[in-house]
Image (cartoon, rainbow, N blue to C red; front, side, top):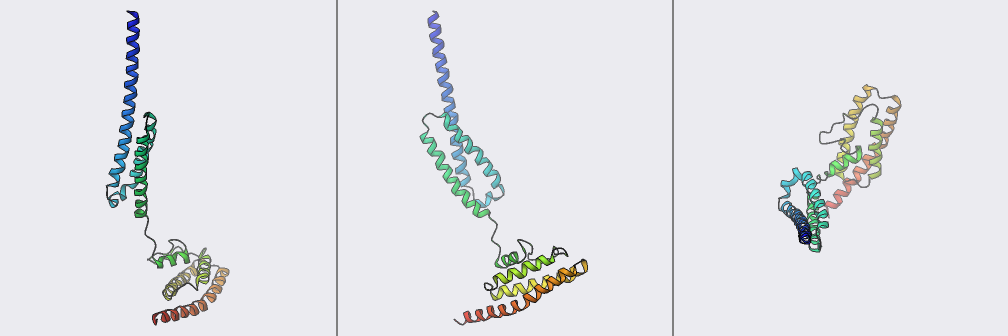
Length: 219
């Protein structure tokens, strides 16, 4: 009788172990299926509709992907499940690349690129505000402007030179204000030297760009 009870206990223990193991595998399979379904559902949403929530989508994806990878350890023969996960990962990465392109800020216009080069990224926008230029930095602003023009004078089109003139005149206008706000005589002298350097460079190269434009128009 005692032996029967022991045998029965062992059988129940083995059954319990098998049942527990089966439950873990089933749970792992559900986790993987949930991950695959999530990727497919995200891919089926219009990219424009995901823009505002993309950060949350990425965070949720990372969580589900980590859980799916961990679930593989609970499945004995997991080759098929591994392939499912890898396929979904590839799908998501492809979609993520599309979203990255969609979410990227538009490239600045040629005019804005010129402004950025002459004054620094985002310093001058469509409002043409030079309020950030003061007595302490105006000499360095002129330096960057004139040296950038000098280094790129052979690349500028006639339209570029026209924009450069507008920007230069706006900077000069700001200088008139800054002179009353503590501009030192030394900086004023250095700026005068830069202006003397810029004037003939602008005139000659703008004429050259205009001549080249006319030449191209006649072809």
